[in-house]
Amino acid sequence: MPWQHIAADLMGPLPDGSYLFVVVDYFSRFFEVDVMKVITSEKLIKSLGPIFSRYGYPETLKRDNGSNFVSAEFESYLETCGISHRTTTPLWPQANGEVERQNRSLLKALKIAQVEKKDWRSELNHFLMAYRSTPHSTTGVSPAELMFNRKIRTKLPELSGVRENVLVSDRDAEMKQKSKDYSDFKRNARDNEIGLGDKVLVRQEKQNKLSPPYNPEPFEVVALK
View 1 (cartoon, one colour):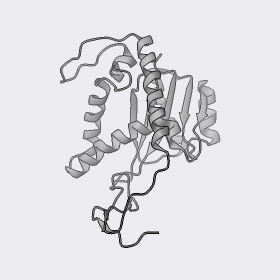
View 2 (spheres, rainbow, N blue to C red):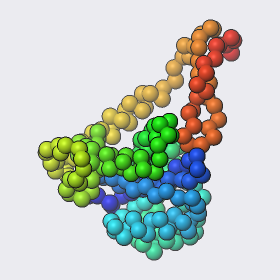
View 3 (spheres, one colour):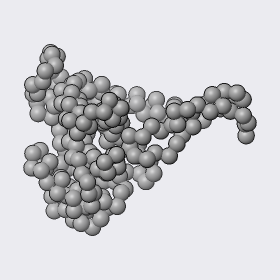
View 4 (cartoon, rainbow, N blue to C red):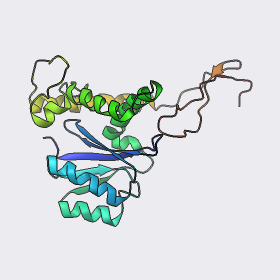
């Protein structure tokens, strides 16, 4: 069922110094995003208040190990709301995979807005509308439909067909297993095939979340260790 188990994460800083507070529902993949300038525990609690007033209190909240989420103030708030607090494995963000996937999608949309010199806040709203109304690759149903048991009205053509929750759960479990198998295979060590004279991109230190991860100018390999 929707909104029983949720995950939360912070993304940033963005070029203007703000952060995105992302809250994801595990079942429907529906997520809320709040733009924040200050990310103390007090501010996170204040942001969660309106979200919980719309959807109610979940049974569990999963988050990363940032100090904002592990403070006594934040723990006390969740306890007062009757929410079990789960943490992810330190230095292993994939454990909070649902939020990480949404973050990548959000970043991609914001990077495009940055390159095209558009207002990223307006583009964020357009992205959320499109994401919430589009069938998810794992469940086959839009996040909004699973969350509210109805389609939300958009300018996009409607897609027919309604899935039962049990079918969604079965497909969800199957896709998660496939994703796990692929990730396990992908993380196996492989020989480095880079040779002398090859052109490579060098990873660079990121100034903010919209900075490209690699230097756009290629470098030539002149020696091998």
